Length: 216
Image (tube, rainbow, N blue to C red; front, side, top):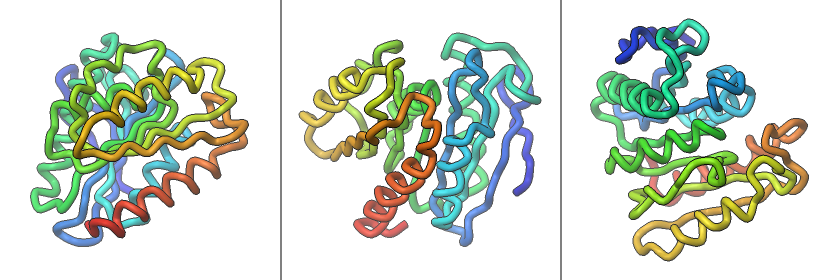
């Protein structure tokens, strides 16, 4: 898996890239947790998401946002991090101009940035949001949400109680033209200790269902 350096607005961004298996392979961008809470692209949930898309033939990219690892710059309260995500998706699309589908997946803070990104990219076909911090950040920008996707959360999450995610899901489900799946993993916390296998199993099943409905 090659290391790549992306030219970000605040300097270089460190990334890992797995090319697709064919010229028109679908693409997926994976976003990591909060930089100020030790979030980085090698987080176990992030790596699991990366591998799930990779195994299905996607051209897949994960990266460290500004100020994380070898990436230059400093944390910018979400504004610069959204710009980094857009830079990463631009690069991924430029590498794969014939991509059949575009997906965005994120965990925790990465889910928040990822959902903002897909609002700016109507070409997005699907999303995965794991433990979205909907009680910490305002998700009301999802009006309307341009793509169907999966929200995955843990019943034992005390940082973001499930009811906070359900509020967002219920609002999105009133929108026509998209389908929002919401899955709760019994006993999983915000950090998914001892439940990484559940992330793998549930996201795999969702991706396989979506790709069966519309092959990429």
